[in-house]
Image (cartoon, rainbow, N blue to C red; front, side, top):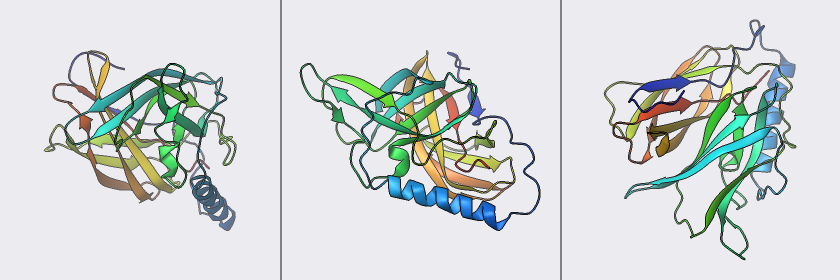
Length: 243
């Protein structure tokens, strides 16, 4: 929940998946590899979402900036009763009588520059595009499409990755501790941090952890764009492997 009081909120991506104990099979390893390969292949093509997903609502979109960096934050809600994963997303600016200018519309960029990793059923999340160089004048837009290749997961609940800010870090240079609360390994885990003041996104950043084994922990550094002093911090670490 968001509030006007400074606080720390660590948010996961959904309920803990059940029945994950036991040995890892060759079939499971192959399915994880196929999913990762499909994402690599998808990152080689430009993403321009034109037909929006009826199960996803864009609740807000903000640009945050400071002298060093600019980031875009999109707040999203899953209106459905099942988790949604690998959702293509296009963000950009449209001016009157002009073609849209995409901020993430190039090919061969990071997969998660153009995809939302996961949203649990009936849940909200934030997605961050960091490292933006210039933002043209006009109206910001965000369009989320339907996952096709790779498609959304069919699991009823997502594995959970806990995220918490470590003490002794500055307001704009964070250290985040991730805890994999399932036995499933997670790959290229995205960590999103959003600073909120009086209901407005004022800071945001994204970092990644290459591999997080089942029931393991990892620490990652994360730089925030914007101005987060006195703001509430929300953390999101959605899973990337689901079964």
